[in-house]
Image (cartoon, rainbow, N blue to C red; front, top):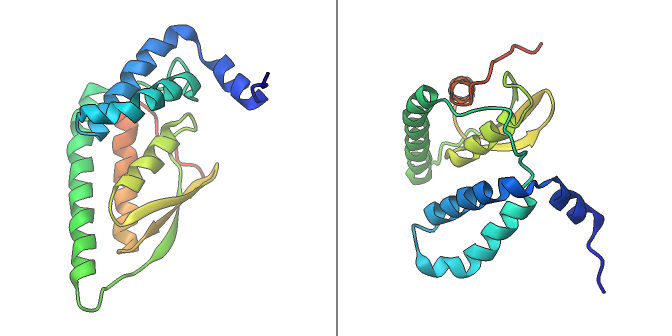
Length: 174
């Protein structure tokens, strides 16, 4: 008989059975979006969705909520940032001299430490030309290939929109 490692027992123990249907629906919807609705993808997707729903580290009750007005202002900004970043990366890749200006920037958090920061860091990873490479309690370190001033102002705007989306206060931490 094999023993279940203690860390797996701990993860499963934190999952409340009443939260499981909601997580299954959420992860199944995400899988469907990622795969473009491909029915053949469920061969691997069904076990992955079930496993993710069971061991999900997210608490049953989120410390933040989604704001509908915040989402309406967040989505166009995120799409615009993504398109602008993609065009900038394409321009740099096709330019004969490839004008890259790689830099690491420390961006101090203004969002509370309740999952909102990780959400923001993952959003940054989705935008071309930027990548969150480290998260600490005080700041995140972002790699960029463009103008650092423009990147910092974009991070501030994206953080403010994320705060509106998640109904979270922003704090200046000095």
